[in-house]
Length: 342
Image (cartoon, rainbow, N blue to C red; front, side, top):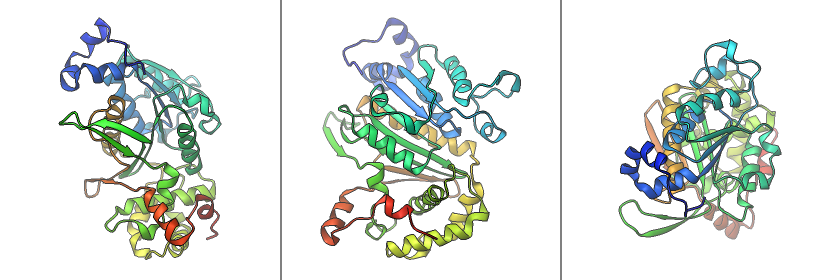
């Protein structure tokens, strides 16, 4: 982003109301920002709508899948008329609709497999958001973003039925507190660091969604399933994997309740539109804060469960891993987890 460029007269007129809310400097930074999004389902659709309306400089969308009835369930960007599909991918259809929300934002499509994009590809962006991809893909993309000489804000977001999760990696992030000009520094863990912390070192009262998401994510990775390609028929095998993971981490299985596991398995790839709106709204808010450098950012997980209506922020830091290494001389790795037979 070029902080030296000013808003055009057209931009100042179009964004007048929000400039009054968050100031011309935030709007200027937004208008110069470049955002990349991969995996377009309900939550990401809500996010894309929010940041396009907010006035980011450009949005690049990536999702080569074709339209299915399931993908239409929470995606209001895809027209219901099958005659307009014409062999277009989800990204192409959503791109056409997003352009109508705000003609000032450059919306484009990037074709290709997310896992095959190299480090230089991500250098073109200020923000990278990935969804509906495998555990290994999340780790790989996050690692590529961290290898760049500049800081790229990285997010993962997933919605499984009534539950949602956001992960944030802003690396070493300097920002101004909301109610003062005081500058603060936050050090973020990578996604891999945050999910390989030994469970027995996690704080008491941690959201059970963190552990449930990790078990299901590992199960999908082992089975070679796409995210959400699970059902209640998988419950027995998922329970076996949970048992192995809990034994390794010296954790009582009751910390990962059957009721929550079963609910997420039954939901599979289904999305709840209200949950998508909540998660997508929060993600949009966090990205705007990261771009502007103003306001306390989320660090580093956010969980939402529609059953109790609670949103919970959990700071799961790699510092805990380093402490375990010092005490035990070893640390649990992703490779060790995903090779577990169950």
